[in-house]
Length: 307
Image (tube, rainbow, N blue to C red; front, top):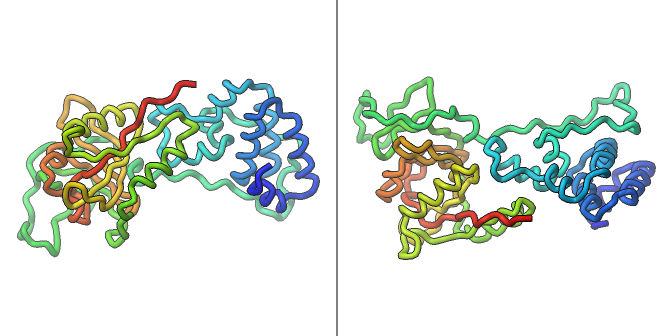
């Protein structure tokens, strides 16, 4: 039993700790014991841990792994939910549609005490946007001097901003004063690989605009990954080789249209659509911070490992 589990068990009643010990003894495989430990670390109540252990006891390791991990080919599960499911097998099982029966040892809520509610998952800004891709057409006529940098014409009823190519693209604005993430994109990719290790998915960081990986080819590989439901981390900078801020590519428009990529900046809570020709022009991206002008690096997924 890890020190993290032992520290959490200090908050449990002696009877609950004894029950957990019995559940671990009854577990048929080492993988079942590891999954029970993860549910404890995820701070589930003793009754939830008991119900989870009873549910997985009859499963072999292959069935247990399938029920407690999210298929990387699924496109309906947000990235943040995948990360949480990687650390919380009970949550992953619920996402996969396996509801746990209530445990017989659960006495129910005590009168006068409000039971601890599990916080509802809130989708990131990108997933709150309408699924419609950006419209391709003539830009709206500004109501004032369009060269002015102090203000910009905006419709009141929508979150639209004029892109660098003069086309309307959806955008979500939150905190324009948020700080940049820094240049340590390699460490971020390593952390992402560790979080996705259980899914058999990993990323490798590449410089773009090189002889080995031109920007055009990098965008094509990114589009293939996005069409398979895999988000792609990219690094933005002022010029080639500059690593200023890491953002996520979340979506790409369907084939047959003018291709556009949805980019989410988690540090500024800003989500925009960027047309492929704007990315290839290396001139300007539709973020509030105009110093991030181009893609300088990209983390592409490796082939998933088969189990």
